[in-house]
Image (cartoon, rainbow, N blue to C red; front, top):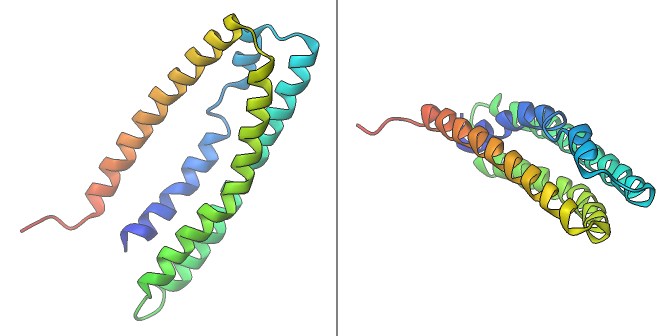
Length: 147
């Protein structure tokens, strides 16, 4: 199995777990939002959830394409890389929309809320880094060992 195919297959569980990763309820409580901020927070959360669903669907489509390609006697490596590129291209507008909504909320936040949000993001990045390390170990286990 190629590295691109392995990467695509590993994206599916990551995208599925990402929907539960954020902890939006925890963040909402910690931020103590005013009604206007709460409204924008809800818009940003919904945009993020839509992006996660889109990424999951795109990953499933990519997995199907990769699987079909790998069933061929001589899989085309370019087709495998194209599936990966299409997944990224498919996800971009959804992630951009979520980013824009979070930036709108950020503009409404005071200094204390920014500090709380920063700590929240740093915690999530530490967790994501651990997932990335695990993914890196998994991918290195799939690669052929030098002789």
